[in-house]
Image 1: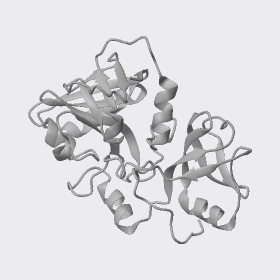
Image 2: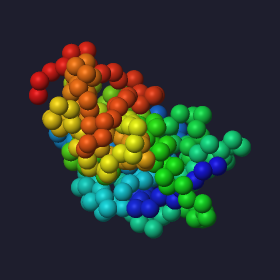
Image 3: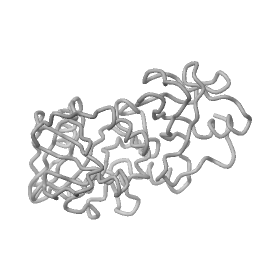
Image 4: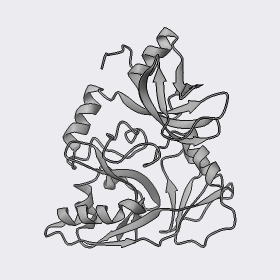
Length: 283
């Protein structure tokens, strides 16, 4: 069973009588559909619909757990506190919590409040996230990156910058991270408009090539024009946030797509339901 210890994470615990209603009205995830031992992606958006904070949300006893970037934890706490007003909610940050992931466990994993099923991945992979566990000797961080890449699971800051992407850009609509049925949340109007009009032009795609990919942050270009940026990289595979209309246009015209100087192929992640646009548009 491969596993990895994840550095740079922090846990926010949201508890109190109004905890669930408080978060339900703020974040993109539908908490009504969050099962006891599941973990789903989510975000707190700006009123303009951009992702200010990303996290993985799960239940923790009578409260909720937000697994986020350590560098974002204090700012997320401040932002949630601004929205708190008179809600009966307590928010605490744990910067020292150990987070581990494991996958492909054929024998199954016991479910508890500290071992959760990561719903960003297919059930057959049995991807689990463990909180407060003892650090293990093995640490397959590269294999974990490869797993994320293979299934198009993007994470900030490698794959996109906070404050610079809509939920559709990073495929949160494909991984259960944004609900269009639960009602209002911060930025909901903009995100719903993108969903119903089909106007999302940037997406996270899987990148592959015959040789090793260049470093994260390398520009993706077609015919000398930048169409995106390379994110997570593991050998000859990676993720990239790109303009899918530009990818469609280049592919249709037979124009090579490059990451730096390396020719690459771009593909939609296997479990995702969006498609390349039928017609391209000029910027």
